[in-house]
Amino acid sequence: MMKSEIRVGSRLGRLLAVAAGVVAIASTVSGQAQHSQRAPDREAPVKVEPGRLDMGGCVPGEPVTGKAMITNTSDRPLTVLRTQSSCKCTVPKIQEKMILPGESISVEATVDVGYDLGMFAKRVSVFFDGYSRPAMFNVVGEVHYAVKTTPTSLKARGTTEKVRFRVEGTDGETFEVLRVGGETPQFVGFDPLKDPPQMQYTIEYVVPLDPPAFICVETDHPGAPVVEIDFTHPTVSDAERDYRTSPLRVEERRWNVGEISYGESATFELEVKGPFVLDEGTPLDGLELEVFIPEDFPATLESFTLAPGSENGKIVVKASVKPTEMGLVLVPVHYKYAGMETRVWVIGSCREPVLGQR
Image 1 (tube, helix red, strand yellow):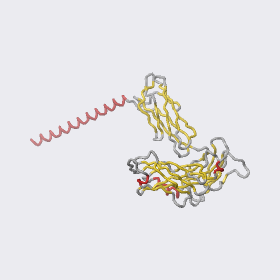
Image 2 (tube, helix red, strand yellow):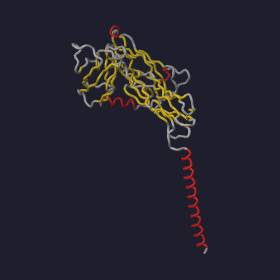
Image 3 (cartoon, one colour):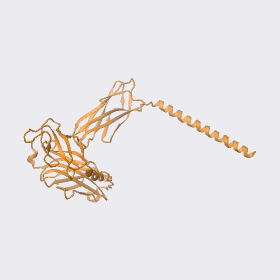
């Protein structure tokens, strides 16, 4: 009898436990339903103008700022909770947190466009109290010099392969293409000996046996002494991949210094990220950072110093590069630290001073 009573008691205990679990689950579901009713999945009653904020043409390396207006289309005040962007390079700012019925506020968006040429598209979101879905607008633009190429990047699989691209001015002025890849340009449908300077050219480029990381176009336009095309090739990609995946990282993959007078040097500042530990007053040589240009490139490294803005995990290196011959400058500056290595390509056009005048 005792064993039978124990079995019955155990069964009853299990049933009670299951019932309690069901009640708990039901309570949780009910609470979630009530919460979802309090914060419905809907957009705030606002109108965003423009929905597509076009920054137009943007100079490489120069931040651009634009504004969008948000209007409250409801009969109740709206409170802004926060703003958010699709990337760290886009910073939205809003001055007022309350929008009264029928009134508007402005949202300022600043984009650090960087140095990658071509089109860009960012998104800015504005969240409101009581609404789960934000109001949004897109920020678009194109990064280019006074002369741009179409496309801004090219791919090839083998050497001696031919690729075509267009070179055009963006200011309505005519210009001349001096060199492509350091060599005489091969025009399509244009004869430089007979035809006057144009606002647009079509170029045919033959991939050399030693493909470059960038196809560089030198012009006589003062706003675009040299324009680079990002070039992807199996030989180039294998070498670049090692530097791109290095724990030591540079802010930009290339740095266009423009025109350099022969005998002069070009100076640039570049952010390098890595496991740097800086004590107060640490000099650059105390970091044991090696900066150099390989011997087989026609340029020398004149100097490099630690620039303001350096901190643990990030340093800013100011370097001066001096070409040793006239023509295209396409040289890699290497950064080596604690067994890690990366590099940036310095791009420019070295000329006699008179050649830079129009």
